[in-house]
Image (cartoon, rainbow, N blue to C red; front, top):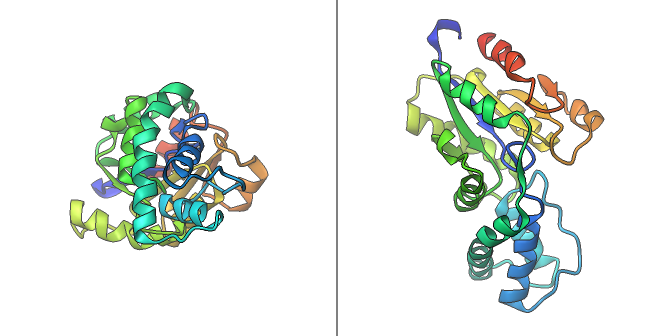
Length: 231
């Protein structure tokens, strides 16, 4: 790493670190039924979204107002249901993630964080299920932003508060499985890595023009090291 600069490697969760095998969708459906007595009758896009955006759309698409009170009820019930659904569905860690996180942890001047549409609470539930939570010392989460690109506003103050003001956006690396992850990284001047471990095909990910495209992170360590050391 040039000049001993700290490098901040920010990971998306769903489709990048883990595959929750539909546990999130099922928890949303069950929460909608439990709290409001409504069966989901329309698809709501989940990939590349924030929890606030997803919860709001779930309510509004079913004729409900996404008021603070309704959102709170929906979110709390979702979080109550999610751990059992994670256990029931099982899911899996995406290829290469354990070894990649272990290697990044060993790298001097490298801080590993989260950049996710999940709330801090749902991120903790999902990562704890797979024993990955201890790798991440900080995070930028999606409970207060309806649109994922808006997380770009949260990245600088969160990093500055935790690590101090002496850093530049070129020291950021964003890793995700959707074009929205790439666009978010670019919005803050970060270097971006797209991985095809979620639901997006290679052509779509390449069209978003990440700095690096990988099928998965199984063989991505050398590429990531080159990206880090080029900063």
